[in-house]
Length: 183
Image 1: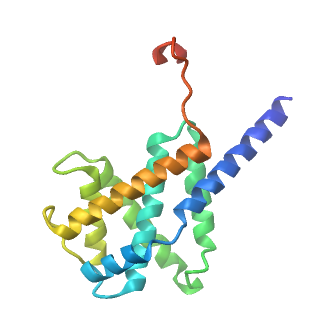
Image 2: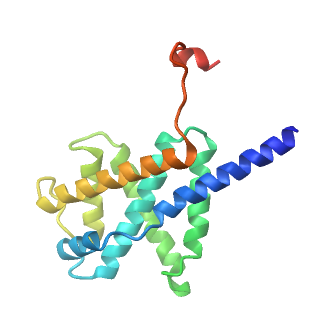
């Protein structure tokens, strides 16, 4: 029965991951694309759309790494996202390698901004990176950066909510301290 239980657990992890990835692959809101193309990409809506796609996907990975209940979740999320991105119909086959390199560059920059300590909030630092990739302003007090930080915060909250909906939440007994459970 142990083998069957393991198989059932793997299938449940795959289903939860697929549901989570579906949210990460949602298209950016047209108003956000218009905003970023105005403040950052010199009117290039396609570039703005891709930057917002990369942002949502990167933040989804970072949230999974930070908040997942199971150690397997972040690696399964990354593996499944990479497989789905490799089949993305929005990417020309000749540009797949470029798209992967661009995503990896953004994921690395957003991870550094998200996890580093320094001036401003993580959302503000990630927004500065988003706008730098888009060719926009990066000063922390710039209205575009402040709006970008709000967009990052919304995306982080949406990813965290989706992660909980897909994978569940921690259920701790009220009468037992968490330190007693880890033995």
